[in-house]
Image 1: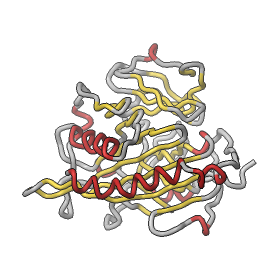
Image 2 (image 1 turned 90 degrees about the vertical axis):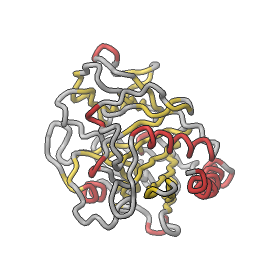
Image 3 (image 1 turned 60 degrees about the horizontal axis):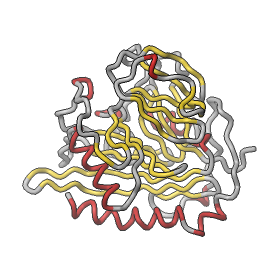
Image 4 (image 1 turned 180 degrees about the vertical axis):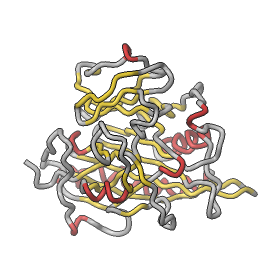
Length: 305
């Protein structure tokens, strides 16, 4: 898989330099902030779309890239990487079909368009198990943890924290003195501090040994994030089991010298959606566009007060 990843790394490294270099310092000087509620992002600037899979304004930079995981004589597997930089933590948001007290579902692209998402991914299917730790935009909806899954906490600074096999007493409304704004209940944690989690719990409900579509959300720096997803076993793709997927994310970080602080596995299978500018990037030929319960998304704050 090295050749496929190395080709992708040329583009990722260029994007990382662009996001951290002097060009971006001026662009990100405008620190607009979105309210911590369930309103969406600001309308997108049509002039912000610069080529295929790229968007930028004074508050957000996004680029979508594609690679291929070769398997020798076996079918390869396509994968996609979304690189994101925001200017304020409020631009990392969540949305549900009809609120986080509802079991309603909606087409992913419809929900992403509703909230003006620049880029969106499928969420954690928050009501599927009827327990977990559900915090969205700083509001707690459920705290019933049973030690069966890893929890991802995102604090008011946009930083990621993990709690492995969490019980309800293991989490609270703050972490390291910072308010928890989002808590995601799916997992497992794939990487932490740049290293693969060797003893990840291969639970049956993650279909860990099956080759499937998969999605992860990662933090690579202050207000810098990466989403990685792979294709499923269809249309000349093999899909990936959970260990292969973790290895893919690890290799992307290693080959591009990215500091992957945390990479967290999200809902997968047919729910895997990488949506950019209202279009599903990871499987555009699938016209079914499965209905999902929620999304995690990144929004523009340009023009917000």
